[in-house]
Image (cartoon, rainbow, N blue to C red; front, side):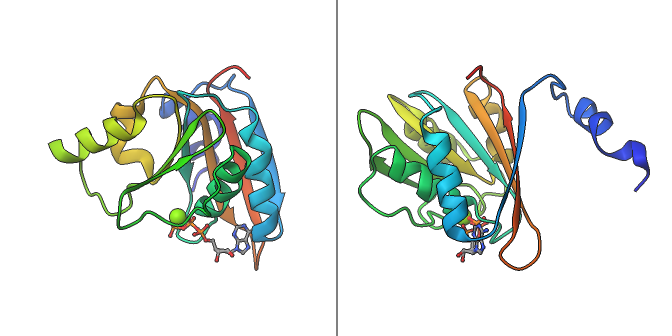
Length: 164
Ligand SMILES: Nc1ncnc2c1ncn2[C@@H]1O[C@H](COP(=O)(O)OP(=O)(O)OP(=O)(O)O)[C@@H](O)[C@H]1O
Ligand SMILES: [Mg+2]
């Protein structure tokens, strides 16, 4: 990779805002990543969409588990890979957790289902979100990218798209 194929140049190429507040974290265990998610919960509001990217097993669902628990969800978050979406009741807010991994593209039914899940007083977490980029545009508060960093280590990159 040439140096100018990454970093700010590729961010600009992707239409991203270089000024967006960026935070970085490193976690050393699943519990750490849950705690990171829990720490984010207080900065999220009804109507927010959080995008989660990263390889299989990077810890996206683990982070959502921590965030959802901190938002008051009593049920332990599990992967919605086959259901597409799970919903949880939190404290004064609902939590939607979508995993679009199995979708190669969006059919009309998928679009309706996703729109329904995002409707109302809901904080929505979306794994493998890129297929639904147009549907969530304008509501994205935070983009999280997790990367394997050896063993149980994970590097976490957070970009806030809403002022918090
Ligand atoms: N630092 C860490 N953070 C998160 N998970 C970790 C960490 N270290 C080890 N793990 C383990 O890695 C796995 C992460 O799984 P998880 O389901 O959260 O990944 P995912 O990114 O949602 O994957 P998928 O794309 O398949 O949905 C779990 O088994 C978890 O225990
Ligand atoms: Mg997952």
